[in-house]
Length: 242
Image (tube, rainbow, N blue to C red; front, top):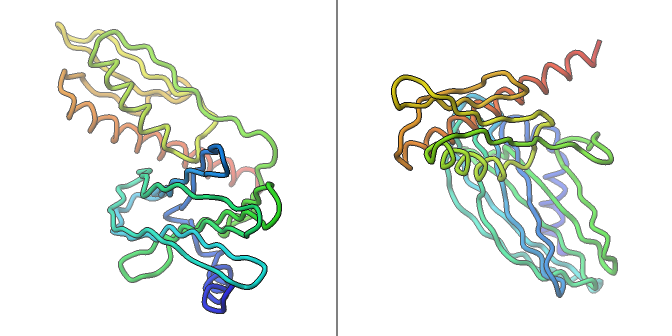
């Protein structure tokens, strides 16, 4: 690895403790055949604020003779409160004779690092080593993920569920609570859709047969679910300290 890349990675590690507290970075990987790996950079807003950000998703390879290369994708985006967004996707060829590093960096408008994620494929091994730069991985073993249950009655209700589930499936950090999309008859021919977490209503609205409206409601509902999940997580962490 050349000196420039080495200094860059060292500087990332030195400041890691300040990362991912407000905007969290993650990399989703889908294994393919013939040593091909599909990767997607993902950002998640953990706060009530709206951020104007830019990112760099890099693939850094190095071999035993100290030769290295770096290929990057960059872009700018806005992240709404508690929103999760896919940033960029690419396909990477993993050579077992080379060390490959996947690195996602998310910056604010002042070019300060907000979130980072790194995944390392070591040379001459098929074992994948995943390193989170911002904190230690305390969740060992199997982690339960939420189940989304559909109890809708109309086509708008089904469309909302599809939009919500599509957005929620992008969420790299799922809680272990049951999420329920329930639709009930309201006044006249209207219906009310409720989004529940463990039987608690987190968000509700009156359904309309307009796709754009339902998409907006799905985004808002997901923000409320993420906000509630973060609240439960923070409350659990505070209780465990005592």
